[in-house]
Length: 256
Ligand code: PEP
Image (cartoon, rainbow, N blue to C red; front, side, top):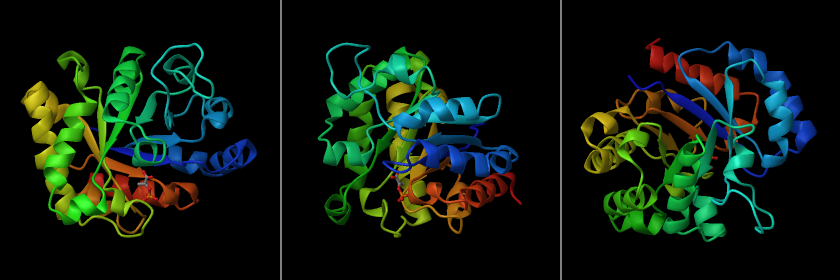
């Protein structure tokens, strides 16, 4: 039984006062929703304040990124050790990190290994761009991204992983992937690759999310897919309707 996850990636939005104001507004309603794990990934500067605000509740925090070294001369970076003070999770290899900040598969892999070493749950993002999609290369590209990101992960640690299939062409475009394709890539391509790497039992225990233009109106259709274990949401996590989206996800999981 894989407990589904609904995670909101705020990206580079909301300064600390806005972040605490927004979370104060939605906290009670969000905490009232059961049956899904709830995660918020704010910008790093808000982690301290939000960890304080959410203390004692069941909403978890994720960092949007981190470096793989523990400390040292890496100007501008934050380390797994720092992230671990406030967060249970960390998003690794988001397509914006890969494309805008040139993160390579190798760097993504180092970050995944560092997260696991520091008891953080990495939410490892993979997904093809439009050109690869139109060339019919999605399956092989995504499988290779998964292999590269998870190289060297010990079988005993693998069930702690969370993956997210986020086709780049669906991110922030309002054009979500159709649910059958999401189920195929997640249920066949990614889970089969996880089976190849870690064996069937472990592969079956790993949560795999869908991300890309998920909204309150379409989240249930993704959650209803047998292999889609939740959603990683960008734009729609910045609005009060985030509560509605999470509730719709929880209802779909409960079958109501
Ligand atoms: C994302 O950035 O991870 C994402 C899925 O964005 P959006 O929901 O806005 O498409």
